Length: 436
Image (cartoon, rainbow, N blue to C red; front, side, top):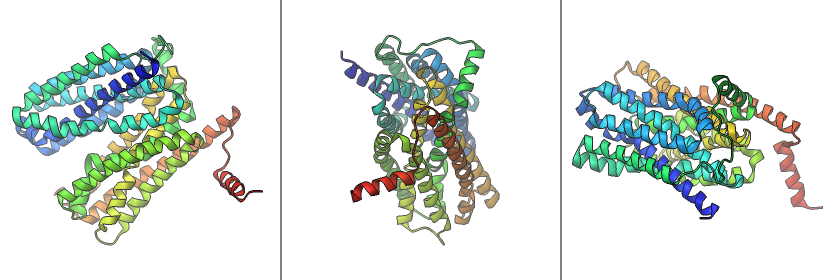
């Protein structure tokens, strides 16, 4: 088997594992009514499961990144699949809220191990020039797991019941683990990078070294500032804003969310190609994504009355850039850290967007409750004030990006790589077009 074909197989298996992880991540959301009846609890309690899962996922990113550097992506991905299988199995037979919460915690733990493992496989199996595009495609393809949870999982749930649906999901994760055991390898060579079981002091040293590099922190601020707005919109507050705030029908709101997903699928590979062709201008792409998100939200929030439909379309198109933009953060981590520290750096980066999204979701909810008196009847002005909390993240994130970018470029200059100011590049191209 050629190395090129083997790389495609490894990536394909990694993609399947990530798709199944997203299926597990979103399965509870599509079974909310059944969960409410099974556990005899309120919607607010069930909604807290989303926050709990985000907390687990974000909180484990750095420990998982450290573990990835210790044991490699193959073992970590297999362990993650088995943990998710156990979590779904617990849910299949759970009859109380604490048991269900325990199952979701396990799912969050396994989910946290999957994406970073697939990114490491991509980085070690493919040439560096192909990694940016493949990273974007990996992130986008994984969202097919949402389709699996919304269609076949729901079909099994409706036709055969709760236990059978979650039991089938658990079995699917076991199959993924078995396939991964049979097909995955950490790298084309026997050992492309040393896997060392460090002492606690050694692990702490690697963590601090990764954190101290401004390239890692640039990736963290990138993931934080570009990724959170899209997650807030899709995971929690976008649908209520469109229906209760903008007065759209449920069908039309769903259509806009679908447009956002499709636009992201188109934008991702394009962003990957731009990163591949212009690696020294990645930060400008990041700033462009942040500017697009903030500008679209500003126009919608300042529009007198409900926004016109074309402006809402523009909003979801701009938010579709959030996911592809956040992936640039992983590219910063990859290019500024050695392979034996890449997992730790990736984990540091990945915690940013999810933490910012979690805090923003909670802050928006608090503001809405304060404005509405806890009645869950929201007006457009309530949403205007609540969504304004996003500007805190954008401003703080932009300051972090600009500060760490200066430090990165200073360190690059020390190694002989000078990034000319963008105005000089534009002026040079203009002179070239004019000719002698």
